[in-house]
Length: 437
Image (cartoon, rainbow, N blue to C red):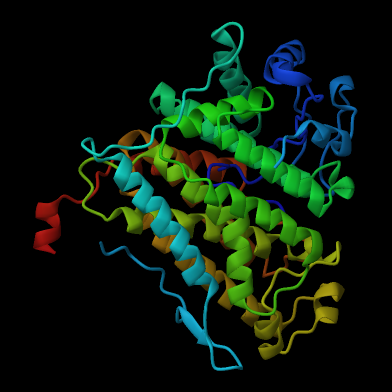
């Protein structure tokens, strides 16, 4: 299951298919060698669409080594708004109190929000991450960001245009995060996915740790390392996304929505938590930092749930069912029914409930988009409006998501952009407005 990127506002757009790992460099010159190598090979990306089975392959001589070899170069190892879901705690059979997935994820939200608030206090003595120093020309770091820009411009076209409204520093940071997320997703959903093992993901996580220690392995890593040194980005959402990739290696069923919620957070909600420190919260916003992060999380969850509902048939053909097993049973739907791909009245009723849930997450997300900085609101509004329309298309297809793929046509995409722009011009409610309500 491909992750739902917060910024990929074109549901049928091409995405980053080549993981882009470079040959392992040697000794202390590994980053310099990698940078030089990458500058000679600018086309490190191959064409591909968002889902397995639909990817277009294009061979590049510089990318022939499979991921097993690519990994050899990795080093060792206030009142926040809450999502209206179920209770945060459940009792285990032994009588112990266990946290639900919602509460576990909210703990990450609180940690990231606290980090941001600490960084916003000018009088506090903070631990400042070191600047990323690259050997050789200072222009190499600029070139690293330029490679990230090219990836974003090619595979997230609509969002890329929106990023141009941001300040230069913010747009570069978003490009770097986008590329890391695409590379991570491609580990289990790309052309070399059959070679990926849990150990390979462990090495990728070790490489992530090096990025946050300002020890990038290649050019694209260097851009992210510089980004996390400049913005209050916590490493935990990045680790959690890798955990979602681990889950995809062994798990193909989800017994209830609590399990599915955690998976959706891992592979998509994390993107929202990574992005808010870059997008920025509007200075005039009266919302708590925690609520803004919670709503960013909601957008990632909504996007991923929409992906799941859109791709039921495609996932079933790969032996995967990303739907709550207990809710399927309650609706009287078996796995055999899903594999048969027949639209019945039971299926329609079930899908209506699933779509209603996804829309609730989109509604929650709207509250957070309004609080972002003015230069960041347009691309996020566009993402929300376009992805939510996929749910409308599922309904228009009479809930046949087995053999008909719901997608938003180009005319509707074009119409959505000015609507998103108009919404982005509405500022957050001021404290005086809040007092009147």
